[in-house]
Image (cartoon, rainbow, N blue to C red; front, side):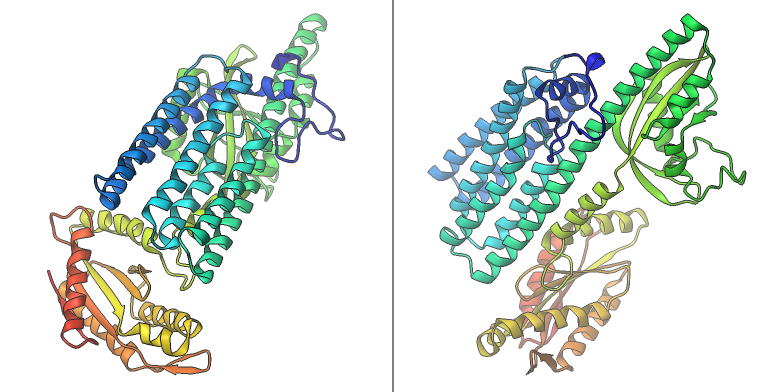
Amino acid sequence: MSPDTLIVQDQARSPMRSNGLFARQEDEQAFRRGEWDYIGARLRSLGLWGTAAFMLASITDFTVLGLSPVYFGLLALRFVVLGLGARLVLLGRKPEAPAPQRLSRALLVFEVAILVIFLLVVAAYGGAVDYHAITALLLTIALYTYAPALSSGSLWIGPAFTLVFLLEAVFVLHAPAKASSIVAVLLVFANFAGWQVATQLNRIQRLNWLDRQRLRREVVERLAAEQRALAGEENLRRLFDTTPVPMVLVHQPDGQVLRYNQAAESLLDPAGKVRAGLVPFSTDFYADPAQSAQLRATLLRDGRLGPLDVQLKTTDGRPVEVMLSSALMQFHGEPATISSLVEITARKNYERELQRLAQTDPLTGLLNRRGFFGQAAVLLHAVRSRGETMAVLLMDADHFKRVNDTHGHAVGDEALRQIGSIIQAQLCDADALARVGGEEFAGLLPNTPLPQAIDIAERIREAIAGQCLHCVGMRVQVSLSVGVSLVGASEQRIDEALSRADRAMYAAKLAGRNRVDQLV
């Protein structure tokens, strides 16, 4: 069944399953044919960049395993994934959608191969479950947000992977119950949120496609009827205005808005300023004007645009995330652009929350190690552009194992939370603080010369040493050994500065602990 002959069921008999896919196989196949440019591009991107990232991980294999038989076995498996990714890219490059079973099978095999090899890598590496949990969390997120849903079973890959990983964490890595519980909570949340995001995205894409098919068909029918009966423009106005999807019709040469429907007015003018005559309804609703010019150039070149995610702004300045689809058309003999807008603010908020969780230490609420290095890259780029320097602090609680051994891990966890809060209070808003290890904290101080950084480190050390922590009814006294370093003028990353701060911190420990030392 072609898209033009697709029979759209009425609202009481929704053609959607709960997972957002069409209930009828012929409708799903028609959707894939109609949206193959978008689906094929996602498959190519997934096959190319997913394989590239997976192959780059072989460097970590070599670092951990060396030139061992296990390393070469994993390398061979990674080349298998390379072949599967290449197959996915080739399928995505086809001018028309391949057979549904062939396409779904290729994507399923690619996803499962990556997950299985990751589980083998976990078994080969061993070590703490925290180290592997971050990658598992990112893989789970990627399953829902980056891989297109081509079958109902694809949504169950994430929960199945999570279950196997947790079993591996318990029986292979012998992870402590607490660590396993934290990882389980994060992965379950990621699956729950990811499932919601994926099903919502599936539904939005298909409803948007249905509306565009219906609109295109109705416009064609209206024009045919208009030619036969010399009907007036009012028919098109009614059709356009009653469409539930926000639609905007723009005169292409000068960008003047020719028409917009009630749904578009509700989305972009919720305060009613246009209706009240306070402001005109214009195309100046892009949050980023540069993006507006780029999208217009793409539309003029290709004749169509999207669906793609963009950020707009309402007439009262509120940002709104939408899925935009546009196409060139003729309106009264003049070139025009018709655009449909589907609000996806909730989905974007889900994605941002998942990204935040992946970069946050669940115990202290500070950045975790991954978030620390990401923030370091941002801050380093900023200070380099301004010709400034940046200091690095590495702080470790002295004899903290005694706290856990003497008072228990509940007291130790509360002590770590309080230590993080005390350190944070000594830093300014421009600084960044992370928990990068068990009782180890790292700070980034942009635009801070070495003498000032040492003063800040001393204030932190004195604040910790001079305060008795009250943790779960216990009084705990701790101290910090602090290493201070500066990022060199020629250094493009903070790794070397962090290494110097680490050596300075251990020098402080060797000198008696509860000290600040520097190495530049």
